[in-house]
Image (cartoon, rainbow, N blue to C red; front, top):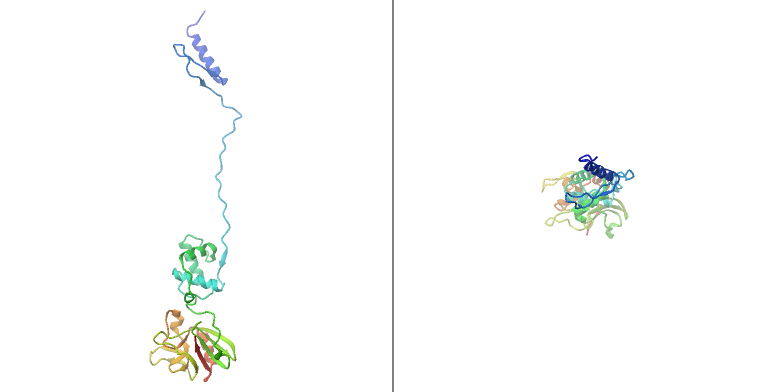
Length: 273
């Protein structure tokens, strides 16, 4: 006996069974025509689980090499200071010595550009500074003095001599051809030049004040009219940004004090290029 609706139930069961077995079933439409096959597939228990890729963190590179730090000295430090002056991070020097002011200037420069504020001059900081500045000239490198002395004039090789070179802007105190001490000096301007030639010290005045310009001239050693070798507060403060009225200015007060104690009336003074 046929139960109405039973074939339909069997068809559904067959289709479900086919789906469970992973087979293809071709159901028919009401008019008996076959539709396109539909694929059924069971999930495989052996299929690999999707893996989650961990996001890799790039390894930090080596720290940049330190070129100079506090306590170092030399021509490289002098160039660093001259370049820091160009970008207005340093206002003293150059002195050639990596001091606390240089360290502060480097730290400020680093912080402004997002670099680690170490205060040490490393290769990365140096490259950034090079890109922002020009190669300093001799005047910039020795704005406050300290330049190497030129070879002494032949007239300085005998006796006791204050040997002054305009080329290197230095004064050597020499005794019998031997250099005892060297200091940085500056000279008169275009309209009040320092006279050149061979002279003698004819007067020393420890606390001298100019009667013409009313400016102090400590440790003055006069050699030609009103021109003398003496300490200059302006030179100590501004370096070669200024000039004298014809005198030979010294910016190192301790050094000029030693010279004043050693030099005698009658000692030779040679001013040359």
